[in-house]
Image (cartoon, rainbow, N blue to C red; front, side, top):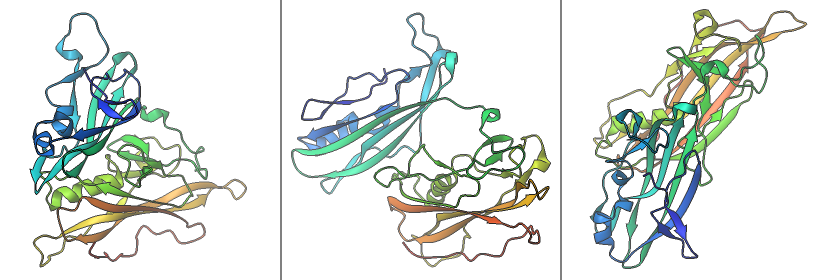
Length: 341
């Protein structure tokens, strides 16, 4: 049974036996108190990320009859942290937040389950406490052909843009912050045509055995651009994924990898600048907004220590009206900024 701990009474202590509600998205919080931290760090499953997904599955739909293997859905951890361990009177990698993302599809039931974690370090003597947060989020995949569009064929100010990756379309989106300033793991802001935007948040990087430079770069790129990399941008709002001429390829400028006299340094992306050029076409009495080209360019900083756990990220979106100017398919060169953080 998938459980979602809740708090009990005025003390707010965790009760672990509470079953998660089917199709019930909610967040709960509770507190744990440890009388022997060094022992609990190693033996208490509530602190170990693996206990929230390993050795159990969820059912696609609630059933009372015979259980068949096809009804089971495995829980997939997203960058699971290392197991908790004690060092210098501190319990490292203790789970502080658990988020289940559950895809549901009508009568077909649950299609996939993923889980993400935030971890923290706990220090102190007898009676030290930890507040934990548990979130269940049910969602339904929206078919690409039902995505809201912006006018026909021209774009309307404030409506979403369409991007595509190997034929699958979705709305262009950027980073979104939670109330505490951290980067939301699932929610993102939709980019609106003609509206310049700027967002910022802090991304928590769990320390894992895979936390090398390449791994950190990959996680930061994923956070900035989203899980599905944008390859093409719709020129008009009525673009169809099968019509190649209705899309423009997005120019992507990643961080340049340069030789450095530093064995513990890593060049990482911290800012994504999205620049979109558009123009008005058609009759003067009824001009239609049409996109010319787009560019994703990353501003990169030199990360001195690979054990960094919190990285500030920024996304900037700018629209430029090129009506009446000579159309160009090239962009000016942009310098890579290398600033230690």
